[in-house]
Length: 110
Image (cartoon, rainbow, N blue to C red; front, side, top):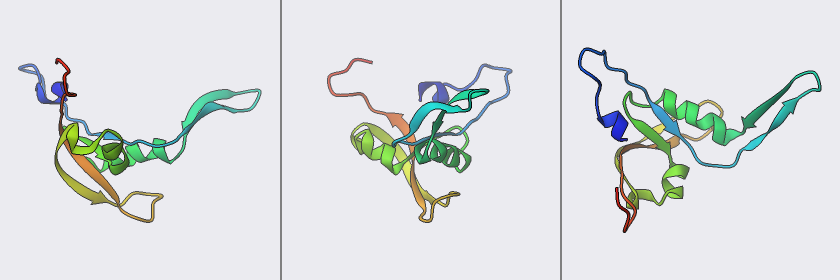
């Protein structure tokens, strides 16, 4: 979050990207045949961040509702709002949170 907020050096055109984060089960393993083996990670939890990112806001981090709850909700992050997006492969809209800041853990030193 600090890097996204820090801006860019003078004389360099701004570079804005969207980041999508999701939480959930995935399968990681070698997939293929004896002639060609690739290590791959597959599953809905892997595809969803790409869908979130493509619906995100440039310069912001967007997280899924499952990620929001897995990290402890608004106890550990500040968000500017939520949106529901329609994504390929899902019948119901996906709720995303637009993250503004990550809050420090109690007793931690930053």
